[in-house]
Image (cartoon, rainbow, N blue to C red):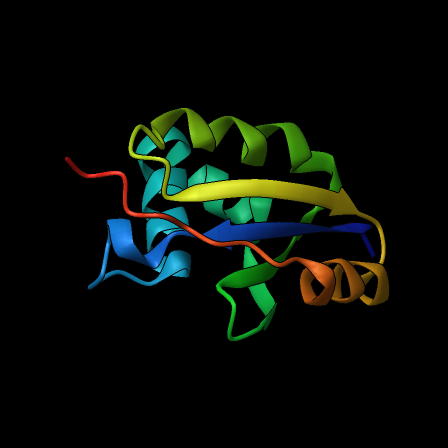
Length: 106
């Protein structure tokens, strides 16, 4: 059994109103690494709250691969807040975040 890491992300829904964060992340993984990347990273949403903060479980050995997909985030849709080794700590961090996305369109 492999180890997992939990990544806490803030999702700016105003930048992509019709998208789900999981679909965006999976699309980026497929764009950079194809099916191989999806099988190695093993992305799974495990927690979200009503403030737009999500916790994803990934394979610990693929942490660098997962972090590299954010090079495709030119619009600032996601903010990576923290990566941790336990779900309890990740949920605690997610619930303590008070993030506000301001509209920066001119």
